[in-house]
Image (cartoon, rainbow, N blue to C red; front, side, top):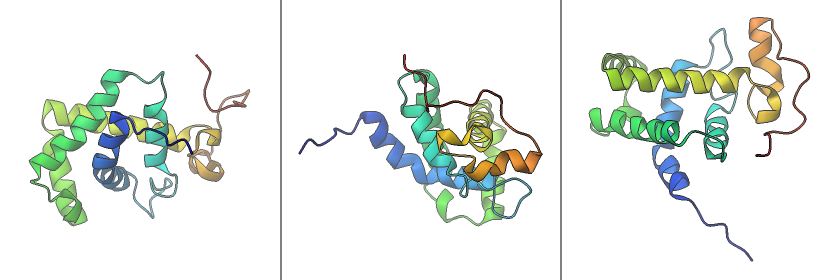
Length: 148
């Protein structure tokens, strides 16, 4: 058997993944007009996108460090907060230059998943497109990523 070695990125991602999930689900909750982050596999999309060899290393580091910083600011309590407390914590984080940039990046990456072609593992059953009464570009991709 050949075991796949887990990269440093994967180890850190697993560590901060609960924070990323909580933030994405707070931004795109169940019951909204847009599909929820959970229903669209937004965190899995984020991981798959970031692990690709073409993904910008600085953005990758920023996403991971920003999640750690949020958890540090909230003294390890972010995951146990109520939705109202999370909103206050995220708004406070947004008021900092770093936090505002980080939340903007998470929003952008999550939206990429919600509205990308379903071949990339998100936008399940084209629900993101349907919510906007819009569709992706043509021709549609036949493979997940362009080989570099």
